[in-house]
Length: 367
Image 1 (spheres, helix red, strand yellow):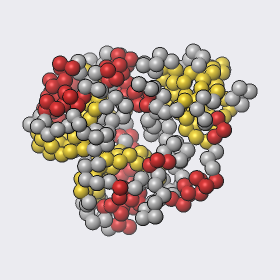
Image 2 (tube, one colour):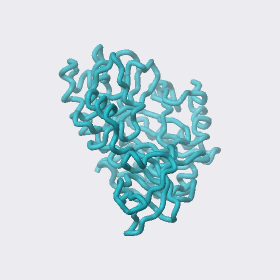
Image 3 (cartoon, one colour):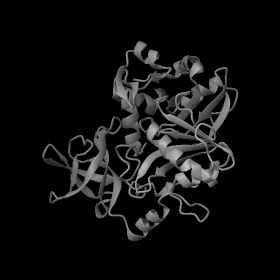
Image 4 (cartoon, helix red, strand yellow):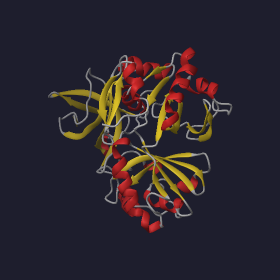
């Protein structure tokens, strides 16, 4: 099992460690609910070094990424980040990802930990069409980069103490390469997977310990705490953010998943599955991913059936939990399109009991 440069800190802090995407990762430190609230109200730190990073460089970088991703990469300018996905050529999704534009010929793709090998093979299979050589213009740096996600309303205020460049006023989905905690060439971005604000810090493995210590020292006065993957999941679910393997997969279309906003049908962009998705859009979707909130007491879980008032199966739960902020069960799932409108009454089948719920607009948790 792989470790990250921060694994020893997790163990020293008494984290409950579990295998995740081939890594030994902290699931929780002092309780998922408390960790969740810490991020919503103060500042928390996630070790996300298990995520993958792939560089794409050279004169054909843009055309390559345009082809393999659904969003319009040409809309990016230097220092901007874009959420996107890799269509799989069969109407589904290879993975969802972030695209960072450093300059016109340099891009960083940030991919999911569990999909690193799969994504790398997928990218390499299309690289020859664009004269990109794996290991050169296309480079997998996943094992060389450590990453911390510092999340919460006080995150940027605390991190400002560690750099002379202005970061507190950074726009959402932007990044800078800067000196941070005395370390040069750190990538500092503001994307986030919690809906609580904050930043991501990318650095080389050999300076990771120095970054960790500096981050916690800077955040001490703000009540900073380490946060595990358990709270990361409940935080993203409150926001209605998709998790690959749950809410999106090789068998779900971006359009069904509510990701039409990252699927750009523009004239200057040809991409994998473009015609398929245009046809799907024209013919109408049979199912849609929705967020829902329990009306009856109960906690929805992945794979629970979603039924109508007559008990007919109309879909399936993809993610579910008890919301730490709302104190009710919440979830996401695919339902037949007629049931996808907000405030529609649905039922979640929990141990042979049909519990009432209602479809809600994303995000599920309204701050």
